[in-house]
Image 1 (tube, rainbow, N blue to C red):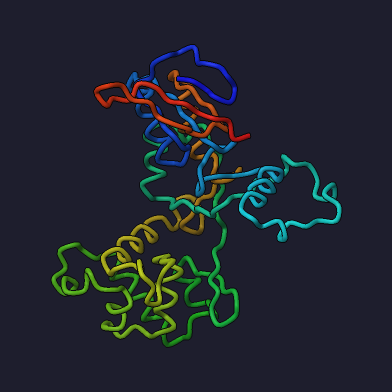
Image 2: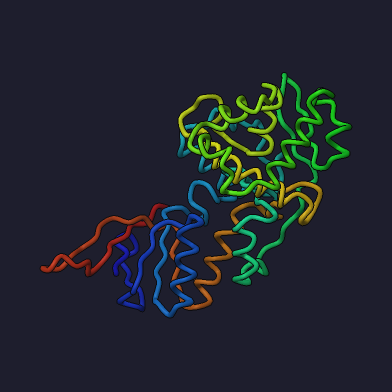
Length: 291
């Protein structure tokens, strides 16, 4: 294994596994392999953990990221010093709220990796409806107090949510709709259009509804809604937790476990080439610094 730009070699010559990229899946894999006794080398061309989705950047790192993606016009500040200290910022490249009763929380608890992180409850969520930012009610009393939902639809909402929570996978009345768009199913149940928007965006959390490719099927939406309802009140008033210092804490925690079990990390190192022997087996890797 050789770093071309640094003209140096690692002390360990052979690794069982080389992983490129430190997104959540890669760091999970690295932690599992290291705990299983495998030697792991983990590389990332970025100088931070998390890839493109699970990254939390300082102000300096964020400015560099914007510069590399051609967005300098968005960050023109007359006096950079007025922004304060670099480390006072934790900027997530993507917002990833975590379901309180979701599989990720269960994994973090079961693996004891949660001890490396600090979480906060999300006290309130909002939905943009009719050009107004509306709070999403999280209890029966909040539903009937809400001004975002017309009175005639509140009872319909509560009835539908009860049906979702009691829903069984072998429900014969649902079978013909499982692979169809969720909106088709809601229309068949005579759910009002405004209430459909609320259920799709605030409860099922479908980012691609409205006829877009990739919109949730009925089966996917119902699964997400059940998970949402089971998460409400688990740790706080809403269904969500959020990392105290940004979503980048999650892949960093798995990376820390990998390092504890002997994994080697090199950030700011991009993959240049793979070299193979006469039998077609990979025998070495050449990397180049990206910083």
